[in-house]
Image: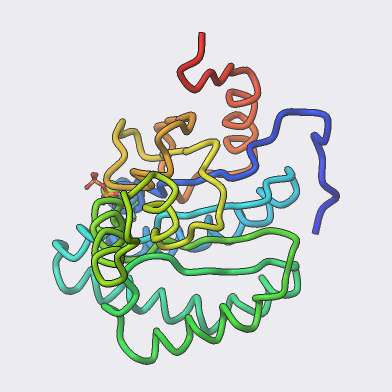
Length: 235
Ligand code: IPE
Ligand code: IPE
Ligand code: MG
């Protein structure tokens, strides 16, 4: 991997990305939406390398939301096919780069062979410490909070529910809250991403469709982040 740079700059420890715009990228080229998702997967691969070389320690990527099941079956199938391809072909490379990969979301919705691939990838890369890659699939921030509440109901704390307690029942409580959330594709919304964890995240929006998102754009986002003052409500 490339030498890490920008050590002197303020780098977000955890950067999250809402990878939006695959469909429009494809349609603008007269291609089917599925090819946009394929190009999006390649952008994801490059972004992992770019994020690592810029010194990002945790990178979370919103790949499939709890609401994305509303899409037509042929598109869902294409996305599941890419998920399988990713698990089959991309894990070795991630491992060789020292990346630990984790999948976050309501995973039980996926087919058994996908779940098997997920388990294998997480175990195989579990000891790596260069960068954590968190792929959010069948993830929804509201669902995550509802699941946390249900976990508390099954195993009641015997006292009041605090923020710390609820947080401890979220999907991945050990991952630090995102410092920077990037959304590509020109929309200005969260679409149910990191609702709890993103309470004090900084946002960066770009019109660039996800498949066109590269190093320059990531650097621009980090530059914007480095220039901000985070106050967390203090004066
Ligand atoms: C993001 O791209 C990928 C997923 C939501 C799976 P879209 O498929 O939402 O692309 P647009 O927004 O329709 O262009
Ligand atoms: C957000 O994109 C979800 C992912 C990128 C996985 P969507 O395309 O689903 O969001 P909306 O529908 O425009 O809000
Ligand atoms: Mg979209």
